[in-house]
Image (cartoon, rainbow, N blue to C red; front, side):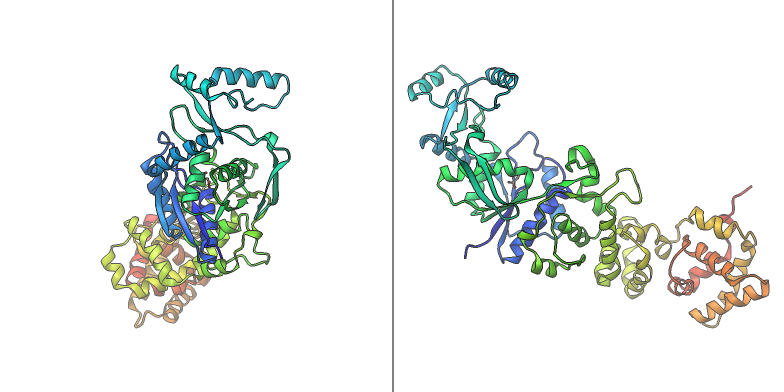
Length: 494
Ligand code: GLU
């Protein structure tokens, strides 16, 4: 059996975006499923647009998603000699020719063809120049590109796409395409094939936007006498308006980094991305890494484009509800110590907690995460909505403030009373705290809920949360007593 060797070859001209990450993920899954190899190749031949920052960002993004590769990163520019040699071989073997047509001439012909409603494509002017004519033009110093000589055969060029089935294109529709620019630089179409041949790529899995390249590249394989890999084209990822997702038109909302910063769990993003264009054939939505590797197959990649339902500008629900739901699922069910590490990074980055303190109270820390994670959507929520559990400088949201504290102005005296009672309890356990609150409510002849909801607002800044007495338990007596002892700062000063 042929060894499975797939590749992820990003062009480092921007950040790693959702579409790129999905391509990387699908290739990774396929490699892992078949105990194959994933090769990472940075296609940096466009030196004007490639940047180190982009390379770093792509590698960083892949590492964060835990999509590990087996070879590379290789850099396409390191293999420039191979590309030039291949172009020369194609020239020598009469599979390519020098074309001296100027841009002006080509533009003029194109316009003319368009006006006459004829097919627009290179007309083959230089295809049949004799060696003597070529030598003459070169001697005269005329610039030239190298074009591939598409075989003028009848019929169609056909191949079997693993996702889409048989794909055919008439030879007559394929123009003689440029493989080397006039400055001597080989183009992507050629470099990509030369590298795939050298890297012994068995399967090329990429977006449907590359299908026109595939047809032309098949001809290059044939002309270079190399075995042709299996091709699988994935659907495009579109936005709600059915536009192709791109860095250029959508900005950072499609960047992997954006999701990382906003507290998405790497595997939740992978799980979501896989389902964006791949169908398990069952109702199952959550897959562990191992499960996904097990059930993944190219045949279940969808033929139609997929929609990434995001809403730029909406701060809270800016992304696909399905991604949020998947993230919540992992947040609530993932191994606590793994969650602990992810949240720890954020607490530290936010300067909320000093490591010495965190390390000493690991058990408490994990139990607290477990208590509060049920209502959270992203890791971000631990430092925002959950800030009061880890720091004293949390703020009280306007809604609970109005609903509890301001609605019951007497809480300004009731809370300190409760604080004193809690300070005096022989044991600060949940039952005692609850009893103390209920007793005070009885004495004040108010509903216990008024005190209890007020407590939640003061202690956590939030309206909703875990059971009030689980909260007092996790915060501990000192913090609870201190926070309830004076709440006058919560009232607007007049
Ligand atoms: N560098 C190309 C891109 O980023 C690679 C395409 C391919 O997979 O061959 O689109």
